[in-house]
Image (cartoon, rainbow, N blue to C red):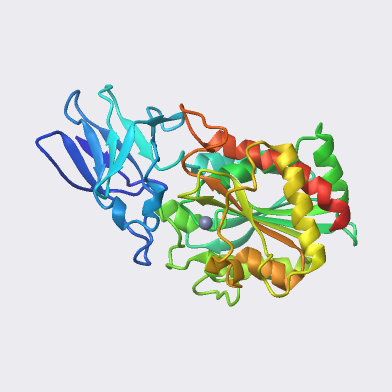
Length: 374
Ligand code: ZN
């Protein structure tokens, strides 16, 4: 039996095996202790050698509430993923291992790999309207990519979307893929309308080195980027430093910060309504965006979300709160589930990469709806 996590985004450590044919595993933490939840590895075993994969430190993860009701992902080709029977009891996540011959891959969520990134950027570069640039070099191998398209008129509206500040929340990268592919579709009238009036600035992966390392929340330096927006530094959080500077250079009329939520089985947005600086205009925009988003995608809902007293709702170190406060604009955090959308469940795959892409595509409609008011 061989377990391997020594590849892009990989995370797991083998603790041992048992006579009952269990493989005991532990999720490795980020450089900042306490942050662990993402895992992704491959396993090769002889037929009948292994029965179950047991993550023994599931209770010590950042969000243990993420495990009840969660079903793990498995792939036989590292490309097509489906859910497998999984249970959570006594602090351990137990995944049933199939006896198929050949290697299998297991992951918390279908990974968005370097090949996906390369294909998306090649698709963007092939469009003469698009500018793809490296906003910064983060670590020796990891560029912070920025994709820009749309009006270059002096009065163009500036819409920013920042995805995957938290590297374990790979839904956000899938979302960016779907968002950009629809935005660049020359036959899509909604996309053409948005691009005629606005300039779009999209960061598909805000945390490239953390993604490569298989981290949950932090970059390679151990910084949780979504707590760095008040005072980013070149040493600790260069990603936020550079993106924030570019936002102040362009101005911001609307901002989307894309995430995944471990516990809630719903798609939801978190706005700026608790900030003391929140204006009636921001309030109207938030409501209009939410209403149009519900129309555009039944995957989006506004019944379930963060409680009103959650401390992050007034914390200006978070991207959407900082931007909403600094620019007085529409600024939202968008959360997608790891489990499923409980309103529209899919027993085969639950919420997955493809569904995240479709949600990214669907966001064009609420964006178009609020554009005249931005
Ligand atoms: Zn997040």
